Image 1: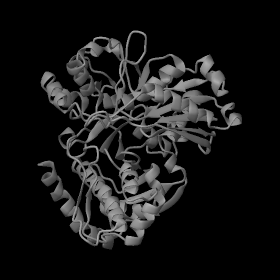
Image 2: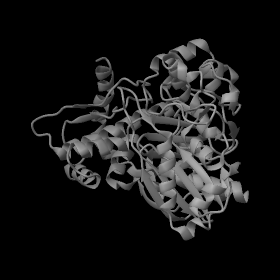
Image 3: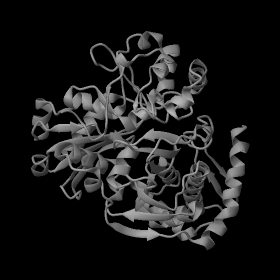
Length: 479
């Protein structure tokens, strides 16, 4: 059996899978986000480790004892700053932190080849601008930095004592030469750093170290190998078999992602498309990224005094386009296609008849419209997407799937276990690392639970609201 650990924003998920890829057991432990100032988003790395241990120990002891290898996946872009003693110097700055917008322009001015080297436009979510912000605003901390680790790689350090990272996660730092799959000395220099402060780079299927004896003893496991792993989106893709050129998925987690595997590095930075390495050798991927997806559901459910199942039921009872209400889901700013950390969400078109059901319906539609924006720029870049495998917590709602499929004009394929997400891919990467089996044999698509075909009539009904949605962004962005 193999253990996959996914360090998410709202919690840590641990799963154990057998050799066939079936999930044997899973457990989660919650995390919270600190927002001490506007645009800021932080977590304490010590909380990651505590939640990881809680999640792993929440798995059955007899299954843990049979684990042959561990894989890691996690939230991307976070800046974990360690000093000479490998202790964290400050809270980690997360992927959805927007404070470093000015530093993005400064990095691109310092290194005009930024987009050519990395394949990406500099965005506040990436790791490099965060370090540029610390260098400017917290210089006493910056001079103490000896190592910068991504969130899941901090867990690796706790688990193995090794400082290592994989290609897919590291591609989201803005320090990686995406085509060469190596650190870029020029990009590191643009933020005052060197290779000595970076972890060693591995492919996701390589062994990065061995579980420390004391950790293994606490977990009731042998000191097994730990695979390099993946960023959360690449890990989710590996878990559901999105590992061939043109394969695509829709991830509905805290954030929302449309992910397309590519056999070559195919950037489109002008439209805020992400072009990163995949977690498997010789593969890359494109992404459109939306900072708020299922998190909008959680937020709006609290706002209307409902739990999430009741919220979805209210939306379905109201029906699509049930009123003029329009929701812009920019609760944490937006990446694709706007690259705007300052824009915020909005409700428009409210009237005296607006009720919780119509509000709920508008929220589901608004998140779908944001993904339609993202898919449109992927298609502009020449990427053909007709079918999307669906993963993440939002995959549980079939009704939402009908809205998404119509808005995107794409078939949605729901897979058994798809809601497990990146932890499943992490476990499969561990299996490859330990057994040396091929990715084609291990990273297979789970059985199909159901398929939603795009409803043309529904798409026509949604089209006027989608047009208003696109007209609303520049209006609210201007204020």
